Length: 325
Length: 242
View 1 (cartoon, one colour):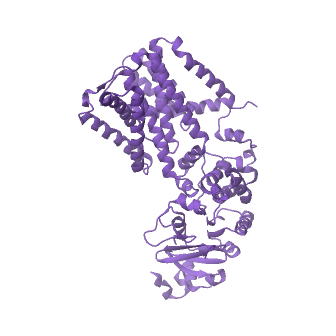
View 2 (cartoon, chains in turn blue, orange):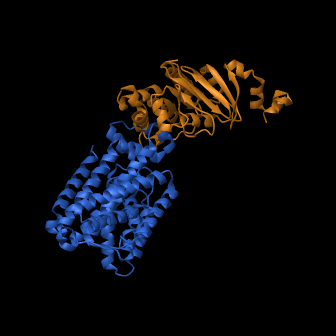
View 3 (cartoon, helix red, strand yellow):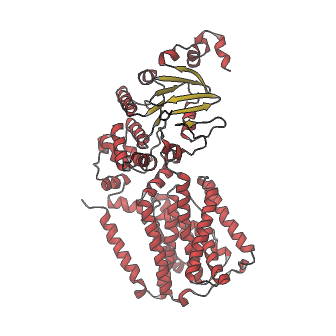
């Protein structure tokens, strides 16, 4: 019997080699695309971390913008180096998530989603109106690493690997079990001893630090940002869409979704200059309609290990007993 | 009182007290407030007035997970499995987060013991969706047992079970009591109540209507009226509860 782990390992090693050596082979444009893909993967995967507890957030744009501004202002106002500004972005994003989470994580479903959307709008309005942020004009930074795209690539790669490790850890550890229990039946999880408030808060903070880091990276990479771009609802929605497209509640799904959709988007952008978003939206709608478990769900079905039950049974060495009824 | 244990519970001004080692049955017509009482004890609801004490500690404001870790376990009438994980992992949630810390054993051992006591057998590696109604009841019991409770609240464990399955469940519950667990159970089947309980509390419209042994409460005229209606009691005064 083929163990399900093998192909994943081989694919992972191939991907690792590709990612490590990509700057040697890729031209600057292609490297730029790969950087955008890695950024999207971090956004999608970190968004998935929270949805594993059953909470659908639209605050990713808020944390992205917050991280961008926190890091830009740390450089411009305090004269700090890039890595201090990244730490500052992570710290500000994490603290904001803690504060926001304490207030809004009691809400569920669309109420939580709307509260997180409101958070993003409030932040954008604040940044737009405040004096020290540069208002609607935006902020400018010198390019990171003297404009070296290769160095920037390795930086975003490091954040991506960090996000990947966090995601895998959260799945394999007790946290993963707590997430799944809370997502399925919160009241039952509570009665069985799960501290649901603490668990969801931790998930929210971890899930929010990554978009904050991506915001910091983005402003350093493109050197210029305005509030409308930094806090755009598109950022939250695309993280959500990529995760759903690839397959939520998993590590591989959001990454696959980010890779496929980003490539598709870039291709359509060059192939159909005007109105490419219409085609893009159409493909999205069709895929989500006919593949409710995302690309990962289809791949699992094709590989024969489609049902989650079989994977668990194999992983725990149990016999298949479900046939008898 | 060093080792004694009691929960004092107030619902609408009425108090329920359970002593260590007892099996107390909570019965009453639909809507009497039985499950609400369970939700108050397990912490899913907070009382508007009154207090709840467990092992001599006031737990009125404690969160459900805190009460669980103190030793209050419960099952739900409508089984709510974590459908996304295996039966064994369902039980592991209880042992990892609820109980294993107090037993000194590993969570996996605690969960395995709980599954064995509940009689889940080789079905622990199934998904919850593959279990029968009786299997789900066993899983529900195993999850609660995995939290290593001192007080176990069982909400209608016999519902939907066949006669044979009920008999097995009664045996299991007796075994759990022999292990030193105090049991408070909601039950509709009077035969089960008679078989299992040391004491019966009858609730009606949120209040304790009668309390005593099985034979005492079934002979109580107020109880007969509450269950069968005022005419069956043959006495208009039985209506005075309103």
